[in-house]
Amino acid sequence: MSDSRNNAFPFDWKAFENMFGGRFMLPDLSQIDLRDTSWITNYIGEILKNVNPMQNNSAPSSRLNAEIFQTHKSVIVRIPVPQDIDEASIRLSINKLRLRVEGLPTAKSQHTLTLPVPVIVGSSRAVIRDGVLEIRMPKDPNDRKFTKLYVQL
Image 1 (cartoon, helix red, strand yellow):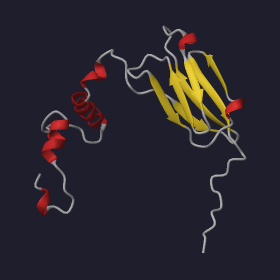
Image 2 (cartoon, one colour):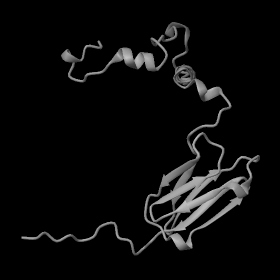
Image 3 (cartoon, helix red, strand yellow):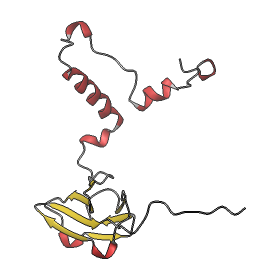
Image 4 (cartoon, one colour):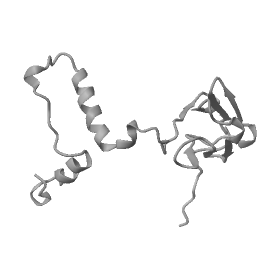
């Protein structure tokens, strides 16, 4: 099956199985009530543990757990802040399309988040409340997504 020459959609199954820690062994389906799909969640969870052995470790993650969403007038970013972190050590930098976060206990020293729309940098505000860092950035209504470009003839 790993021979890609005879397959319209080449795929290296051996590399795929190695990435997930070996061959996939399905549970005995005759012993499972197939109406209860919780076994699928457990099965996938066990596979993913083999992929990322650090998942159950207490080492900091390299990913930033950030929630980014929009209202009619603003872009809002919410990031949980652990209780043991010195809030004064958090540093934020912003431009029209990106937010940089430093000082959180992750494997990376800084994280850059891409914002969904251009924002007004000077009117943006950040506050930590109830263990959540919230950054509110008003959308820039003057920044059009498209500008006319004329073709020289």
